[in-house]
Image (cartoon, rainbow, N blue to C red; front, side, top):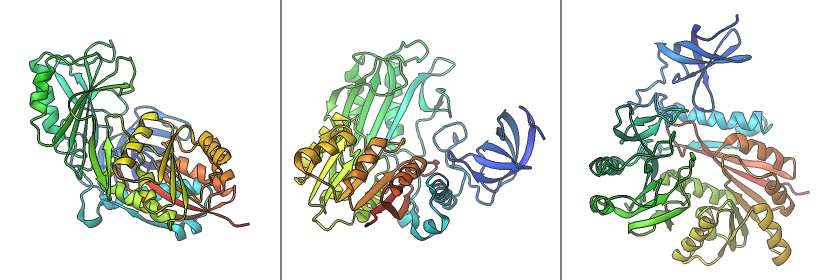
Length: 463
C-alpha cells in the first residue's frame, strides 16, 4: 500500500529511534511517531513520506504501553528537551543500552556474542535512590516576546525557535525559577528589550545560569546584543541578594547568529568564576567553560574512565580533547605524568588554573590539535603514551588523530563518548589497526532524553 500525507494510520510501537521517537511498521513499511513509546497502540496522521518510511504525528493513544508513565513536565510534548519523559525510567535505561549495542553491531561490526560478554550494566540515576530529575547544573534560556509583545523565557519548541514559556524546567535546579522570574521583572520594570532574531534588534538574547552542586555557588550571565545593560545596579541589587549568588556578568554577542555566546565576558558583580567539586578535585568554572552538566553522573563517568585506565603510578597518560582538565586531573592522581591536549585556548587556561588550585603538578596542558601536538611531543621530547584517553565532541575523533594514536601504540585506549554512532565508527578503525575491545559501559548523563554517554576500554593486541 502507498501512503500519502494526512493519511490516518493505526499501529503498534515496537521500537524507538535515536532521538526517542516511536517506531512501528505496517506490512514492512516503517513509521516514526514522536511522543509514542514502546508498547503503545496509537492512531497517527502521516506528515511526510519518504522511500521506505514516513513521519507521522501522534493523534490518539488507543492502548497505552505498560511502560508509559505520566510526564512530570506539562510542556513535555512541545519542548524539544525531554524526548522520552513519558517512558518509565527503567525502560529508558534499557532503550539506551540497546541503542549503544545496536550502533556497535551495525556501525562498528562487533558481534552480538562479544558485546554480550564485555558490556556492563548501564549506570543510571536510580542508583542510591537518586531521582532522574533536577540534575542539570547549567541551563541557557532564550529571551523573547510572545504574540502579545510580553517578554518571555523558557525553551525552544522542538526543531523551532519558538519559545515555550517556562521558568521551572524539571531537569534544572530550583534556583532557575527564582532567578528568571526576578530577571523578567527587571526587564519589564526598566523597559529592557528582548532580542529579535528576525530583525537583529533588541538587547537581551539569553540568560545563562550555572550552579556548583557541591558548593551551592550560583552564576548568572546575561548574553546581550549591545555593550551594557540599562539600570544594571538595580539588577545587581536584586540578584546579589539571592542565596548562593557568586558571579554576575554580561557576555557581548552582536552577531546575527544562532551561536549563543560571544567571546567577550565582563563581570558586573562578584567573581569571574564559580567553583564545584567532583570527587576530591575542585574546578573553577567561567561562563565560557565546558563542564559536564550532571555532576553526580560525571563522578561515575570519570571514575569509570580512571578504572579502565588501570593506572599503577608508573604510566604516561595523554588526555585528548581535555577541555578544562576534568579527566586529566582525575588521572593525574594515579599516573606518573598526564599531558592534556585541547584546541580551545581558554579551556587550557582554565585547566592550568584548576591544576594549580588543586596542587597537582604532574600534569601539563598544551593548546592545539591532538594530531599536531602528539607527534611534536614525541619528536622533540621523546614522550610516548602508555595510556591515551579521548573524550571528543559528538562528531567523534578526527581521522588524523586516530591515525596518530595508532602510530603511538599505547597499551590502552580509554574512549569516553557522547555519541555511540561516531564511537562505533572510531572503534572499528582502531580494531582494524591493532586494538581489541575489552570493556564497555554506558552512563546515563541525561535522563529523560535520548542521549547516552559511554566509556570503552581498548587494549593493544601484542604481536
